[in-house]
Image 1 (cartoon, rainbow, N blue to C red):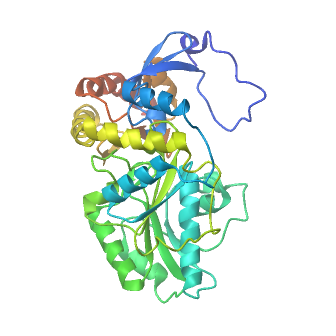
Image 2: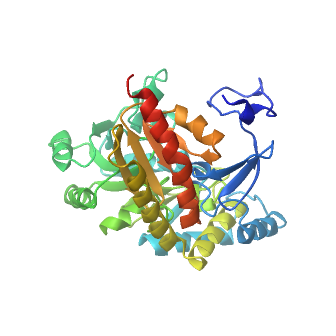
Length: 406
């Protein structure tokens, strides 16, 4: 670790469980696409809290709205109606073409709710042991059920026995999906990310999305698309599956929906909208006044500032710049993604780049061991995209040279 980073940062507290491999950085404040640590060092944020800070940091419109809400109500419980929850549900229904919404607090909770919907859908049809199709390299969360749906043996290790009832298939291979489910009357749903995030920024192709939609219709399955990381405008449309012109039956959301305030949602179409009845599911904090105000304001500001178009335009600009600087280099396997959800896959593990980029004043992550993930705020400018490339590309080239002989 570079002493310049950790010179004035206190050591990790012995009272916090060591569940994260943290950098020796303590961030104190931010504005726009930039954050500062407790030593005063500045960073360009190309991670956005892992695709969470849609509006960047300290957006003045969002700050004012949240201050107003905190002065009114933060939490009341779901014994009562919350007007902004109803307004946010209306907006999500309008943007998605679906019909009903359940609010929770995280993407994990949203995915858990989706899995419960699938099981009850099956039970309501008389299927005693419902099964859900999930995907290689998928990531849906770290609870026991979502961990079981996840396609990463490393994060599953030590937590068995896993939940049964999952059939795993490779992405973008409809023939494999048909083979894995042929003659199985227990299948009730297909569940996947439109663009896998933790699995390495792996997009499902529009053609595949259309094929799976047709297969679900043919076999009376629920099409459940996890938009937790790739949704809320990140790809240049409200939801990444919309590039394929389809509508799912169940759509979990979270991350960017509240621009940093914890909120999750499950949006359902007609086939799934009325599976849950009173008492079937719930959550203490879901749909609380603060979180839904954050969701309402996030969508309002995104529309006012044209952030979907910005994500598409600046994302394409950034991807082209990365391609110019890194494409074709030995050791660079692929540069992929859509909008402001991009991955640069190298041919070798490259986790050391996270710290090296931080030393250079750039926040990124490396996922799936060898994929540099860039998910900056949707307010990113072309000048800031140039700055990302100017900081990142030399470090990638240096890394590849140093590890070429390894």
